[in-house]
Length: 334
Image 1 (cartoon, one colour):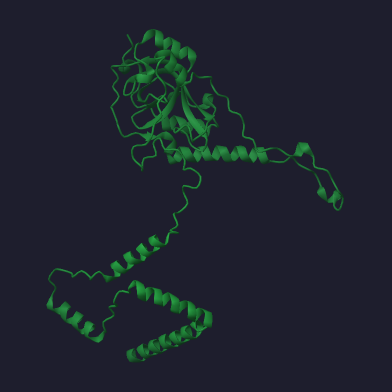
Image 2 (cartoon, helix red, strand yellow):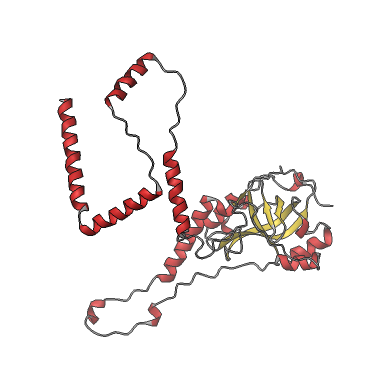
């Protein structure tokens, strides 16, 4: 029988806090404080095509070593690939940062994954964890993304750093060869990864006839299992069909022809008097909608004016008229 969670674990396992500490120590698990390394109780959040667990707040990808899986399989009957919403105790575990393809692994960011490596696991049906449906992907947390971006930038700087080439003024005007030792390819450091058992291998041992599922988001706005956009899908749609253009112009005209809605509600006599005085001094500026025929005629006239070079003269007349109106308004105020 598995030990009770109340005797072994704290129910407030904090993946974010441990992951930030790991990244601040440059992926060195030995430097993470021992106070964060005790046994933890977790819940299986996804069991196929990836084993994902959560700590009531964030979920993270979980991976078992072969020795851990063999020990678990001998002792417990609950299948890992059919364990969604089941509770487990990870007695011996660690976090590590590894390289992945973020298009294939949704528990990652910038082709880096902070993963949970479990070396000793127990099923815990009597867990005291609070079931929480709304948990967040740890790799969508801004603090963690900032730390991952910092490590990536440091690796790029180290890979592109050139050694001291000395005083180059001595060889000025002379042809010199390129020192191959002085140039380096931009290649990020290989990270030490613990050898883990793929979920596909676990599935074959637990249910040989089954296969890994392929998740498709049910909601278009959901990014839980969504991959990156296919090339070209981000480009805006351009209307090239004349019928589509005509339909768009008709919609604009219909919108212009809509009568303005009347405002309801009572107003005071004083406000009505002010509005009546202002409205009496202003002329009506309501314009009638333009038909398709008039619109086409306007486009043709505009092209003719542009070819004849008359648009510049019309613009000058309009600007002079606007200046006269401004001057008249200023004189009235005085």
